Length: 187
Image (tube, one colour):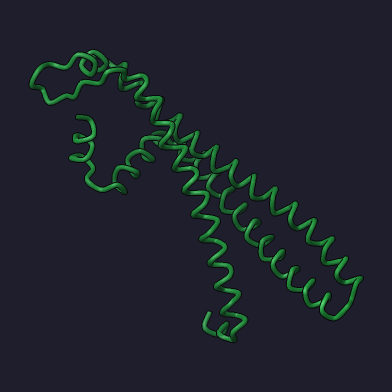
């Protein structure tokens, strides 16, 4: 089957993922575009994380002001929080949108490359009607199988976005925590 063939060629999941991403980055123009989008993702990730930190700090300030009975400070912190939450939401959605664009570009590059290879010479005929005992697995509908590659890139987009956001928040909070404990001289 196709699954067994892929497992023999790329035994590890990371190897298969690397090959799929590499397939989407065949041309130098695609690699430059992916690099630009990657830089935009990192910049938006930094902005989103910083805004999240500002929101958390502002909540602490609001709590302190409410415990002291300082109503004008509570209102000011509330208004600042409204702006910070809106900006953080925009940064979050732009980050997700940019990661989505990156994965769609990777998918379209991979799909274009696979379609060119499939239509080249007699590859389509050999895939649809393989020679008996040639070791080539039968593929019922290769065009549908090519379209199924999109689901891989969609799941990759979701996983990368979630992992990046949680990892960035963790790193940012760990740095702030170590600075707050007086160990900032180590960094």
